[in-house]
Image (tube, rainbow, N blue to C red):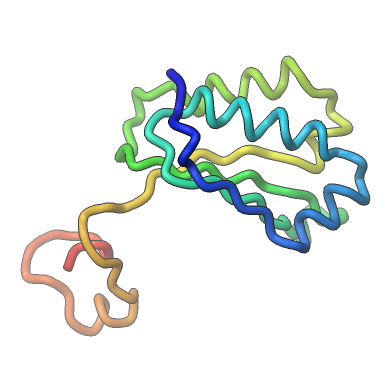
Length: 130
């Protein structure tokens, strides 16, 4: 399912520097291209530095692919991308890079959690309801 070429892709300077340092520019480009071609309804892709304090390792990179599709546990697109990553890249690459597919919330403005907690709506809802 091809994605229109209008999906913006941004790379933070910190992520770009770390990817260059690791020598993984080609791998990141392949991962982005695969995400653009295989994750449905993308609205943006961001490559960011991923700190790995809990793992005790050096920072890596995360390719965050945001879709306008709501979360659906039956949707296998992100699983398929994960399987592709494992088939295509050695562990030495995957220990530093990952692709995350996430829904964006398009149901209205996002309320600050503190505002939601101090003034919750009268119906069962999430902090994303307005």
